[in-house]
Length: 448
Image (cartoon, rainbow, N blue to C red; front, side, top):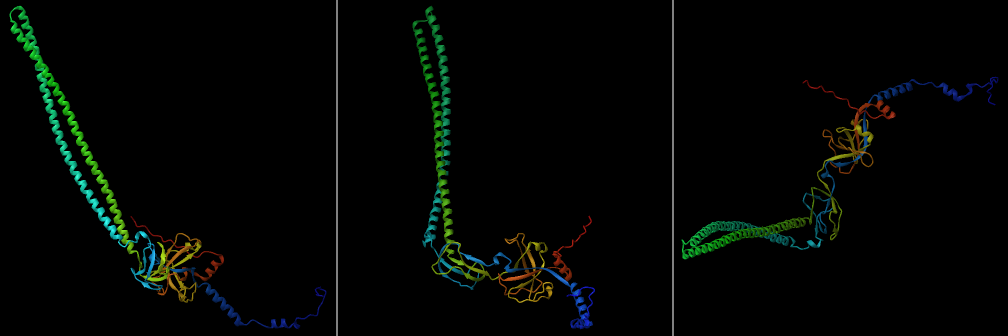
């Protein structure tokens, strides 16, 4: 029975319970109270201590300029490996020979290929000179034909003028003969009338008749002469046209030969240009059998090995790390942190291989970290949706270790605003962003 009824009167006494007596007999000491008050005071003070907000991320060591990054050395032409001049880890200077290869294409096997091609080039150049001389001679011939044709045309024109004048003279003689014929006819008719009247004799009449017949014969002769002169004019015109056509054809033929020679000369010049290109290509190709170092650096790895091995055009044969480079740290931040970051933000960096003691909220109290500043921020995200931030060494801070190598890991803290620890805890509990807003600076405009 539990004896819970109010009517139930029990003789149970607390004085008989040993545990309760031990607890109630103890009293809180003043030392413990002071300790608790001190801890609360210290905690309250800590809440007002400064805390540096930061963004933490990991990245790797890289170089600032593209030519300072590790690069592969490729072959420009195909070939067969004949001799290696370097091995892994060798230091080389710009222009040092790395590999010698030999030719594998049959069109380049001729050892005198350049000499024969240069001889073909000389022959083509002489052909161009010959065509040039031929064109010059054809120009002289065209000029001579034009001068000769001009003289011949002048001569034909003079002859045509002479025939026209002769035709004019013969026309005058013909008209004179016709006038004389008319006079002779009138005289004959008068003498015939006088003969019938008995004033003239038969002999005088016959004399006048003979004169009339001679005059008629003269008219026919002068008319024939005039017609011959007209025919001479037509012949002179035909001869003038024939001379003009002849010399035009000869000049056209000479100019056609000239243009043919010009076309042949241009073809020869094209061949000369092609042969010059071939000679240059063959000379450059001979220099490509020796693969040289593009810059000072260290041969990190030989990718192709074996004497007699065939390598293709553009195939990588070795990797080289430049000996002079400017280091930067590549780190990737989330899009939510991107608005907080700006160029010039101070950064604390911990490199892999260098021991460090890091206090994220008190960067100045950290040990083994190195100083840097944000150099650039990408405007585009990568495949994972993160943005790349480049961090360069802080010129005013401690220099980075000389033993750093490209590709090494690094952890970075981008430093933001200093706030109390209490505010930082309150911000983290509520999920608020860091204090990244900047106060606007107002500038007064100058008075006009």
